[in-house]
Each structure stands twice: as C-alpha cells, then as structure tokens.
Length: 386
Ligand SMILES: Cc1cc2nc3c(=O)[nH]c(=O)nc-3n(C[C@H](O)[C@H](O)[C@H](O)COP(=O)(O)OP(=O)(O)OC[C@H]3O[C@@H](n4cnc5c(N)ncnc54)[C@H](O)[C@@H]3O)c2cc1C
Image (tube, rainbow, N blue to C red):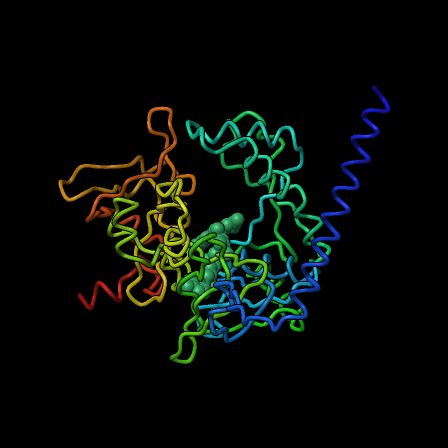
C-alpha cells in the first residue's frame, strides 16, 4: 500500500515536471514570436490625474486632526493636513474648549462608569467604551511625551451618582485655569515640529472622497485650493476629522429639532466630513446626541455665541425663569444641565429649548452682571439706548 502511494506521488511529480517543462516550452515559443501588443491594464487610480500624493491625508486641523497627523507622522508617514479656515483660524472647537481632558484613574471603575452612562444605547458596544477608556487612561503619558510641562488634576465628574465615578478624573495642563488654550497650543507646537512630515494647507477644504468605483477603496480626496479643484492621492487612507455640523443650519434643523440653536465655538464646522462619509457609503449613528444646548444669550456684538453661560456665571438662579412663546417654563432653572443633558424622569436627554425662548428676570438679576458679555456691567447703558 505504502509503495503504491509512493508510486502515485512519483507519477504526480513527473507529471508536474512535465507540465512545467511544457509551460517553459510554450514561453520560449512565445518569446520567439513577435509579441502582439496587449492593451495595458490600468487600475482606476492610474486613470486619475493626481495633483499631489501623500501617505495619509487628514481633513480638519482641530484636535482630532492634529493628533491623527502626529500619530501618522511619528510612524514615518508623509502627511497632508487640510484645513478649511484661513491660517490663524484653524483649531475648530478644540481651540475654544475649556481644555479639560478626561483622564480616568482606575480602568475598571471607568469602564463601569462609562457603561452605566451610555443608558439605553445598546449599539455603543463594550469595545467602543473600552477604546475610549484605554485612550483616556493613556492621556497623561501622551501629554508628557509631547511636551506638557505640568499635568494638573481637575476632578470633573459629570455624573457623580453613577457607579464607578470615583475612578473618573480629568486634567488640565500648564496653567491652573480653564479656557487657557494650552491643550490646543501643545497640538500646534507638535504639528509645527513635524513640518518635515506634515504639510498643512489652509483655506483648502476637502470636498469629496475619491473612491475606486468597483472596490470602493478610498484612493484620495478632492480639495478646493486657490480656486481650483485638486485631486490628492492618499496611499494609506484619508482621515475625516472635520468636527460637527453646528454651523450648518439645515443639519441643525434636521438633527436637533432646535433651529434657533447656535454654535459657541468654531465657525467652519458645517458637517462636511459627515456628508463626505455618507456619500462614500457610511451610515450615521447618534446624530441626536449633542453636547448641549446650554442657555446662553447670543451676544449681538460677538463673533461666537460663546461668552455668557447664563446658568454658569450669570444671573442669580433665583432671579430668572425661562419661558417659551406660550409663556410656560421649560426647564428647572436651578439645575445646571450636564453638557445640555437633563434628567427626563430617569433618562438623561438633551434639553429642548423652544423657539423663541425668553428669559424673564428681576432687577436683582440685572444688577448682578451684564446681559451680554460686551454690554455694560449692569446693562444700564444699553437699556438707556433703548
Ligand atoms: C465652548 C466649548 C468648550 C468645550 N470644552 C471642552 C473641554 O473642556 N474638554 C473636552 O474634552 N471637550 C470640550 N469641548 C468639546 C471639544 O472641544 C470637542 O469635542 C473637540 O474639540 C472636537 O475636536 P475635533 O478635532 O473633532 O473638531 P474641531 O476641533 O471642531 O476641528 C474641526 C476642524 O475641521 C475643520 N474643517 C471643517 N470642515 C472642513 C473641510 N471640509 N475641510 C478641511 N477642514 C475642515 C474646521 O475648520 C476645524 O478646524 C468644548 C467645546 C466647546 C465649543
């Protein structure tokens, strides 16, 4: 039996050798004959006239885009960082942020906490929560490695009643104040230090992902620059980090049910990345999960609505009520919404602000501070002007 098998194997080897020999023979014959000109098979990428080529293209120079660019550059990639705003106005909401960085101190407790506060969202998987927790556990080390001089504990716990909240903390860097821009400056400094590997183009919005029509692989991105549309090749991917849709009136209407809501940060976030991703076939999730709204007066003299967080710094809570157009109150004024979230009979949801909404306050409240940040201390000058 064994020898029969061996024989079969031998025959097979011989047959294979013969086949190879026959193949070589065929090639030889083909080489001798004049080759018929075969049409060159081009990939879809080869058919496009590329204006520039990089390993990675990152769209949006806020915090996410800065860190994505740095991470790729530190791995040796040649990166193009695209920013829609003019130079000096980059930074998105990251620049306006209070600069408080979530940095839990205990992994297990943090997992318990974040799983508890996701509430009924069962499509926010454990894997996502773990990624968030592990990333934020590593943040102190990342900040130090990237030049933060001092890591200052800033124990901000938004849901102290949630299990695991004693494993939650946050940090600020280099100055004991918030809203210092320190976190953002650190990003900018690091991006500048990697200028050999990171090119930054300002006033250069990404407009459309370029995909292979068959495989759907993203090959690059269309960019508006100096009045032209450029095709930029991205050998290893495009990172969309274009922030939210807070300056896109239509999207605000569609997704928040609060058409009179205004951004209190960046001006250039108009949901471009969301639209590009959708066009490329992506689905969306949690579009109604907002960081807000807060109750602020929109300062007529200010470029941004951020300024006077009514319930945080402003009027004495006992001296003001908020009402909608029918004169009824819509919120407990004594409660400061947790990033816009209020407790709706046991479920935390974004507070709904009716449109229009009015603040009704008494004389004690008026005397406590300016109604708008740019107004006189007791608003008397503006009241005088009518
Ligand atoms: C007032 C305020 C205070 C906050 N405080 C904190 C805090 O203390 N701690 C905290 O963790 N979070 C805070 N946040 C939230 C935090 O700022 C954001 O979650 C974070 O900055 C988002 O970063 P990002 O990079 O995704 O977006 P952004 O920082 O908004 O950056 C997006 C960038 O993309 C650019 N862009 C848009 N479209 C295009 C396009 N088509 N092509 C190229 N570029 C484009 C924009 O110009 C912008 O520069 C705060 C937010 C605000 C508004």
